[in-house]
Image 1: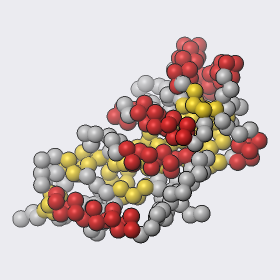
Image 2 (image 1 turned 180 degrees about the vertical axis):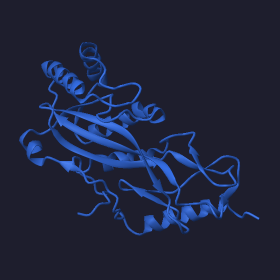
Image 3 (image 1 turned 180 degrees about the horizontal axis):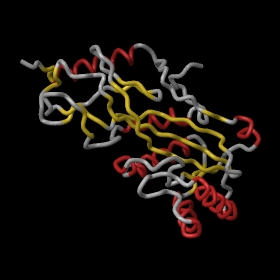
Image 4 (image 1 turned 90 degrees about the vertical axis):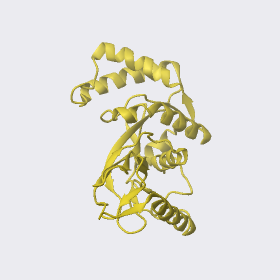
Length: 262
Protein backbone atom coordinates (compact mmCIF):
# COMPACT_ATOMS: atom_id res chain seq x y z
CA UNK A 1 0.00 0.00 0.00
CA UNK A 2 1.33 3.46 -0.96
CA UNK A 3 2.12 5.57 2.10
CA UNK A 4 1.85 9.34 2.24
CA UNK A 5 3.51 12.13 4.15
CA UNK A 6 0.58 14.16 5.43
CA UNK A 7 0.12 17.77 4.42
CA UNK A 8 0.37 18.77 8.10
CA UNK A 9 3.60 16.84 8.61
CA UNK A 10 5.18 18.22 5.44
CA UNK A 11 4.18 21.74 6.48
CA UNK A 12 5.76 21.19 9.89
CA UNK A 13 9.00 19.93 8.33
CA UNK A 14 9.15 22.95 6.04
CA UNK A 15 8.43 25.35 8.91
CA UNK A 16 11.22 23.81 11.00
CA UNK A 17 13.60 24.04 8.05
CA UNK A 18 12.80 27.71 7.61
CA UNK A 19 13.27 28.35 11.33
CA UNK A 20 16.64 26.61 11.35
CA UNK A 21 17.77 28.63 8.34
CA UNK A 22 16.67 31.86 10.01
CA UNK A 23 18.47 30.96 13.24
CA UNK A 24 21.69 30.03 11.48
CA UNK A 25 22.54 33.66 10.81
CA UNK A 26 21.66 36.27 8.22
CA UNK A 27 22.60 36.22 5.47
CA UNK A 28 23.19 32.50 4.94
CA UNK A 29 25.72 31.79 2.20
CA UNK A 30 24.09 30.43 -0.93
CA UNK A 31 26.46 29.10 -3.62
CA UNK A 32 23.84 29.60 -6.34
CA UNK A 33 24.07 33.40 -6.38
CA UNK A 34 24.20 34.54 -9.99
CA UNK A 35 27.64 35.63 -11.34
CA UNK A 36 26.76 39.28 -11.94
CA UNK A 37 28.51 41.54 -14.45
CA UNK A 38 29.21 45.16 -13.61
CA UNK A 39 31.28 47.77 -15.45
CA UNK A 40 32.29 49.92 -12.51
CA UNK A 41 34.56 52.12 -14.63
CA UNK A 42 31.67 53.22 -16.85
CA UNK A 43 29.42 53.72 -13.83
CA UNK A 44 32.05 55.83 -12.10
CA UNK A 45 32.64 57.90 -15.24
CA UNK A 46 28.93 58.49 -15.82
CA UNK A 47 26.90 57.86 -12.65
CA UNK A 48 23.35 56.69 -13.21
CA UNK A 49 20.67 58.81 -11.58
CA UNK A 50 17.68 58.68 -13.92
CA UNK A 51 16.38 55.43 -15.42
CA UNK A 52 13.42 54.05 -17.29
CA UNK A 53 12.14 50.47 -16.94
CA UNK A 54 11.49 48.81 -20.30
CA UNK A 55 8.16 47.05 -20.78
CA UNK A 56 9.81 44.49 -23.09
CA UNK A 57 12.44 41.84 -22.45
CA UNK A 58 16.00 42.17 -23.62
CA UNK A 59 15.95 38.38 -23.98
CA UNK A 60 13.25 36.06 -25.29
CA UNK A 61 9.68 36.90 -24.21
CA UNK A 62 8.57 35.58 -20.83
CA UNK A 63 6.05 32.77 -20.55
CA UNK A 64 2.47 34.07 -20.75
CA UNK A 65 1.71 33.35 -17.09
CA UNK A 66 4.86 35.22 -16.06
CA UNK A 67 4.27 38.07 -18.48
CA UNK A 68 0.92 38.73 -16.78
CA UNK A 69 2.81 39.43 -13.56
CA UNK A 70 5.41 41.70 -15.19
CA UNK A 71 3.60 45.04 -14.57
CA UNK A 72 3.28 44.22 -10.86
CA UNK A 73 6.93 43.20 -10.60
CA UNK A 74 8.03 46.31 -12.53
CA UNK A 75 6.09 48.49 -10.08
CA UNK A 76 7.99 46.92 -7.20
CA UNK A 77 11.29 47.38 -9.07
CA UNK A 78 10.43 51.05 -9.59
CA UNK A 79 9.73 51.45 -5.86
CA UNK A 80 13.02 49.77 -4.99
CA UNK A 81 14.96 52.06 -7.31
CA UNK A 82 13.25 55.15 -5.91
CA UNK A 83 13.95 54.03 -2.35
CA UNK A 84 17.62 53.89 -3.29
CA UNK A 85 17.79 57.40 -4.70
CA UNK A 86 17.09 56.87 -8.41
CA UNK A 87 14.61 58.86 -10.46
CA UNK A 88 12.38 56.51 -12.45
CA UNK A 89 10.75 57.92 -15.56
CA UNK A 90 7.22 56.74 -16.46
CA UNK A 91 7.33 53.47 -18.36
CA UNK A 92 4.74 54.80 -20.81
CA UNK A 93 7.40 57.15 -22.25
CA UNK A 94 9.57 54.19 -23.22
CA UNK A 95 6.53 52.27 -24.48
CA UNK A 96 5.35 55.14 -26.72
CA UNK A 97 8.77 55.54 -28.34
CA UNK A 98 9.17 51.77 -28.65
CA UNK A 99 5.82 51.39 -30.44
CA UNK A 100 6.70 54.20 -32.83
CA UNK A 101 10.03 52.53 -33.64
CA UNK A 102 8.34 49.17 -34.15
CA UNK A 103 6.08 50.77 -36.74
CA UNK A 104 9.21 52.02 -38.50
CA UNK A 105 11.41 48.91 -38.29
CA UNK A 106 9.04 46.04 -37.53
CA UNK A 107 8.57 43.84 -34.50
CA UNK A 108 11.90 42.29 -33.46
CA UNK A 109 10.16 39.26 -31.91
CA UNK A 110 9.02 36.42 -34.15
CA UNK A 111 5.54 35.57 -32.76
CA UNK A 112 5.77 31.90 -33.73
CA UNK A 113 9.27 31.05 -32.48
CA UNK A 114 9.81 33.79 -29.90
CA UNK A 115 13.25 34.45 -31.39
CA UNK A 116 14.56 37.99 -31.47
CA UNK A 117 16.00 39.73 -34.51
CA UNK A 118 18.91 41.50 -32.81
CA UNK A 119 19.51 43.89 -35.69
CA UNK A 120 15.92 45.12 -35.56
CA UNK A 121 16.04 45.27 -31.76
CA UNK A 122 19.16 47.47 -31.94
CA UNK A 123 17.62 49.81 -34.52
CA UNK A 124 14.56 50.25 -32.30
CA UNK A 125 16.65 50.89 -29.20
CA UNK A 126 18.76 53.53 -30.94
CA UNK A 127 15.64 55.37 -32.03
CA UNK A 128 14.10 55.09 -28.55
CA UNK A 129 17.35 56.39 -27.04
CA UNK A 130 17.54 59.32 -29.47
CA UNK A 131 13.97 60.37 -28.72
CA UNK A 132 14.19 60.01 -24.95
CA UNK A 133 17.44 61.93 -24.49
CA UNK A 134 15.89 64.88 -26.35
CA UNK A 135 13.32 65.48 -23.64
CA UNK A 136 14.68 63.82 -20.48
CA UNK A 137 17.87 63.50 -18.47
CA UNK A 138 17.85 59.75 -18.94
CA UNK A 139 21.01 57.89 -17.88
CA UNK A 140 20.08 54.25 -18.38
CA UNK A 141 17.56 51.66 -19.55
CA UNK A 142 16.60 48.92 -17.09
CA UNK A 143 15.29 45.63 -18.51
CA UNK A 144 13.49 43.31 -16.10
CA UNK A 145 13.01 39.89 -17.70
CA UNK A 146 11.04 37.24 -15.81
CA UNK A 147 12.77 33.99 -16.74
CA UNK A 148 11.86 30.41 -15.95
CA UNK A 149 14.35 27.69 -14.98
CA UNK A 150 14.10 24.09 -13.78
CA UNK A 151 15.50 22.79 -10.49
CA UNK A 152 14.86 19.86 -8.17
CA UNK A 153 13.96 19.90 -4.50
CA UNK A 154 16.58 17.98 -2.57
CA UNK A 155 15.97 14.78 -0.61
CA UNK A 156 15.88 14.53 3.17
CA UNK A 157 13.49 16.29 5.52
CA UNK A 158 14.14 19.81 4.28
CA UNK A 159 13.20 19.33 0.62
CA UNK A 160 14.56 22.66 -0.53
CA UNK A 161 15.54 24.01 -3.93
CA UNK A 162 18.29 26.58 -4.35
CA UNK A 163 18.79 28.78 -7.40
CA UNK A 164 19.95 32.31 -8.13
CA UNK A 165 20.64 33.05 -4.46
CA UNK A 166 17.37 31.87 -2.91
CA UNK A 167 16.26 28.81 -0.98
CA UNK A 168 12.63 27.73 -1.35
CA UNK A 169 10.47 24.88 -0.11
CA UNK A 170 7.79 23.12 -2.21
CA UNK A 171 4.07 23.82 -1.97
CA UNK A 172 1.12 21.48 -2.30
CA UNK A 173 -1.82 22.14 -4.59
CA UNK A 174 -5.07 20.23 -4.72
CA UNK A 175 -7.49 18.52 -2.35
CA UNK A 176 -5.16 15.66 -1.40
CA UNK A 177 -3.83 15.44 2.13
CA UNK A 178 -0.19 14.55 1.57
CA UNK A 179 2.76 13.53 -0.58
CA UNK A 180 3.65 9.94 -1.37
CA UNK A 181 6.67 8.72 0.61
CA UNK A 182 8.24 7.52 -2.64
CA UNK A 183 7.68 10.86 -4.39
CA UNK A 184 10.58 11.43 -6.78
CA UNK A 185 12.25 14.54 -5.36
CA UNK A 186 14.74 14.48 -8.22
CA UNK A 187 12.03 15.51 -10.67
CA UNK A 188 12.57 18.98 -12.08
CA UNK A 189 10.16 21.74 -11.09
CA UNK A 190 9.74 25.10 -12.83
CA UNK A 191 10.97 28.16 -10.93
CA UNK A 192 11.14 31.87 -11.78
CA UNK A 193 13.87 34.48 -11.48
CA UNK A 194 14.15 38.18 -12.19
CA UNK A 195 16.91 39.02 -14.66
CA UNK A 196 18.03 42.65 -14.58
CA UNK A 197 20.04 44.17 -17.46
CA UNK A 198 21.08 47.82 -17.50
CA UNK A 199 22.36 49.76 -20.52
CA UNK A 200 23.62 53.33 -20.42
CA UNK A 201 22.52 55.86 -23.06
CA UNK A 202 25.41 54.79 -25.28
CA UNK A 203 23.59 51.43 -25.20
CA UNK A 204 26.59 49.83 -23.51
CA UNK A 205 25.98 47.07 -21.00
CA UNK A 206 26.91 48.32 -17.52
CA UNK A 207 25.22 45.74 -15.30
CA UNK A 208 23.46 42.40 -15.43
CA UNK A 209 22.44 39.86 -12.81
CA UNK A 210 19.60 37.60 -11.72
CA UNK A 211 17.72 36.89 -8.52
CA UNK A 212 15.49 33.94 -7.74
CA UNK A 213 11.88 34.53 -6.77
CA UNK A 214 9.74 31.41 -6.32
CA UNK A 215 8.64 28.11 -7.82
CA UNK A 216 5.95 28.30 -10.48
CA UNK A 217 5.15 24.61 -10.02
CA UNK A 218 3.55 22.92 -7.03
CA UNK A 219 3.24 19.28 -5.98
CA UNK A 220 -0.07 17.88 -7.23
CA UNK A 221 -1.55 16.34 -4.08
CA UNK A 222 -4.25 14.63 -6.18
CA UNK A 223 -1.72 12.46 -7.97
CA UNK A 224 -0.94 9.05 -6.50
CA UNK A 225 2.17 8.79 -8.70
CA UNK A 226 3.45 12.22 -7.75
CA UNK A 227 3.97 15.07 -10.19
CA UNK A 228 4.28 18.84 -10.45
CA UNK A 229 1.58 21.11 -11.83
CA UNK A 230 1.43 24.83 -12.57
CA UNK A 231 0.56 26.88 -9.50
CA UNK A 232 -2.72 28.77 -9.60
CA UNK A 233 -1.13 31.88 -8.07
CA UNK A 234 2.24 32.88 -9.52
CA UNK A 235 4.81 35.00 -7.66
CA UNK A 236 2.24 36.10 -5.09
CA UNK A 237 4.62 36.09 -2.10
CA UNK A 238 5.66 39.72 -1.69
CA UNK A 239 8.69 38.99 0.51
CA UNK A 240 9.99 36.51 -2.08
CA UNK A 241 9.55 39.09 -4.85
CA UNK A 242 11.38 41.72 -2.80
CA UNK A 243 14.22 39.28 -2.09
CA UNK A 244 14.53 38.49 -5.80
CA UNK A 245 14.70 42.18 -6.64
CA UNK A 246 17.45 42.83 -4.08
CA UNK A 247 19.47 39.89 -5.39
CA UNK A 248 19.01 40.88 -9.03
CA UNK A 249 20.28 44.43 -8.44
CA UNK A 250 23.28 43.54 -6.28
CA UNK A 251 25.90 45.09 -6.33
CA UNK A 252 24.52 47.88 -8.53
CA UNK A 253 22.52 48.56 -5.38
CA UNK A 254 24.32 47.26 -2.30
CA UNK A 255 22.38 45.29 0.29
CA UNK A 256 23.35 43.78 3.63
CA UNK A 257 21.62 40.45 3.05
CA UNK A 258 23.33 39.36 -0.18
CA UNK A 259 24.09 35.64 0.36
CA UNK A 260 27.11 35.40 -1.95
CA UNK A 261 30.75 35.33 -0.94
CA UNK A 262 32.31 38.74 -0.12
